[in-house]
Length: 181
Image 1 (cartoon, one colour):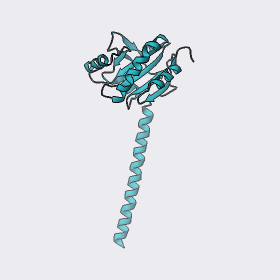
Image 2 (tube, rainbow, N blue to C red):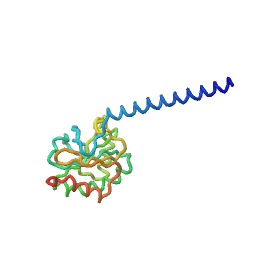
Image 3 (cartoon, helix red, strand yellow):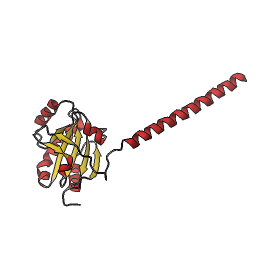
Image 4 (cartoon, one colour):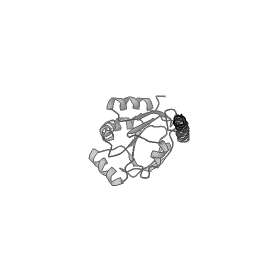
């Protein structure tokens, strides 16, 4: 009987310990999530300043107010990112005239890789380089590509995680056209 009692006590203590550890983990995870909010639809897009790779401009997001903005986080090693680039390039000239700016934020480590990618894909829309990952951290970017559609007032209208098709991209542009709100 004594061995049975010890075994039951051990199992009980193990269960209590497991429940306590689980509670601590849940508390830590929920605390972490509260301290690091993700930018979502309805939020104002956080401002940042980055230098353009395929041009000589510096882009400050707030200075694009009055335009719709497609803010695309991507990298050259990301195959789904590569798939959507031609769609962005195809629509850029038409929608730039209508007041939408495409701003592609490269998360690559070296600018040379980004420049080669731009040349290979003949990209004409602005590509900026987030060398240190500051903007990625600001927006809490997880999977790439991740794209934010921002209206002319600076409010995030839609967040899309994953690649965009030509039709979806065009539909989302309609949501952020200046004068459509």
